Length: 438
Image (cartoon, rainbow, N blue to C red):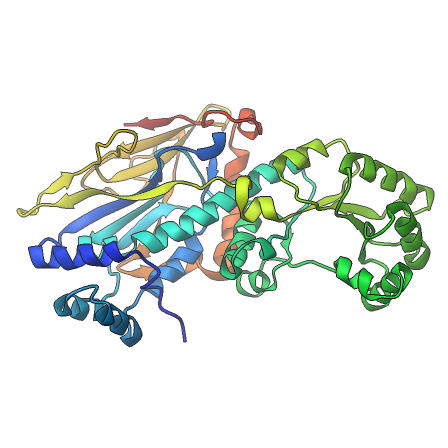
C-alpha cells in the first residue's frame, strides 16, 4: 500500500487552510510559483531535479484515517476542515521546467494552479523534493564538468538519510553520473549500480593475498581491487600477479592522490597491466576532481561532498502566491515586497533565448495574468521551458518512474550543452545567463 505524503508538511499549511475556509477565501482560484531568488555558493547555473519524485508525492497526497486521526488528536484543524481534508485530491494544473533543465535566479521552475486551499497544501512537500534534489544535481553537474568525460559513481548512501540517499543517487545520475552504489536507486529508478569490496573485506581474511584471491574467484579477473589497505605498491603487484594483466581496475581511497595515481599507473604499465583502470575516491569534490585532471585517473567515486555538506549549498527555492481571483472573479497579481525577499506577481511563462550560433544568452520571463498556453509566445530564437506536468490533478506519466528519470538525464545533456563556456568555471561567479522580464 502506498504511504500518504500528506503529513510531510508544515503545520501552518493546514492552519492556513482552516482559517481560509472559515473566511470564505480558501476556494479562490490561485497561482503559486516555485523559484530561486539567487544561485547559492557562487554557482553559475542550477540544475532542476526531483520533478518525477514530486509528481509521485502529489499523487499520494491523501488524508486517510490515520492522518485525520493524528490531526484530530493534536487539534490541528477544525472538524469542518478535517472533513474537507478527507476528500482532498489535488485537481488543478502544474506546469514547469522539464527535469534536468537548467535554471537561474527568478526562473519559474514550477507553476501550480488551483484553489488556494488545494495548492497551498503542497508547498512543503514540493520544496522538500526540489530543494534537495536540485542541490545534489547542481553539485553533480559541476563534478561531471570537472571530470572532463571520465565516469563518476555516486557513493554517498552512508552520509545521508536512507531515503535521501536514493534521491541523491537519482539526481546525480540525471546530472551525468554513470552509476551509484545504492541498490534501491537501481531498483526504483533504473540507475546503474556498481561496487565490489571495502577495506573490511581485506581485513577479514588472513592476508591481503587471500582477500584478493577470494574476490577474483567470486567476481572474475575483471573486478576492481582495493589496494590501499596496507602498502599500495605491494598490493598492486599482488593484484596483477593473482588476476593477471587483465585485471579490471584498482581503487585508491587514501593518500596524496596525484602522486599516488602516477606511481600506480607506472607500476601497472611495468607489470603489463596497461589496460587496468584506476579509480579514486577519498572525499572528492569538484575541486579535487579538477586537480586530478592531468593525472592518469580513469574514474571517480564521490560521496560526502555530493549528498551533504559544503558540496551542495541549499538550492534556496521558495513557493509564493503570485496571483489569485478576488471576490468579483477578477485576477489580481500579488507579490511580496520585503527587503531581499521580494517576488514578482503574475502568471509567468519562461523561455531560453539563444544567439545566432545556438548558444544560450538569456532566461526570458513573460508575465501574463490570463495564462496563455506555454510556448504560445515563443520566438524563433527561443525555446519554451514550461511543459504540462499535471492536468486536472492527474500527473503526466511520461515524467514519472524509470522512463521519466531516463528522459530527464537525456534532456539535461542537451540543456547543458547549450551553455556558453564560462558556465563551467568552478570559481564563484555570477549566473551565466541574465534573467530578463518582458
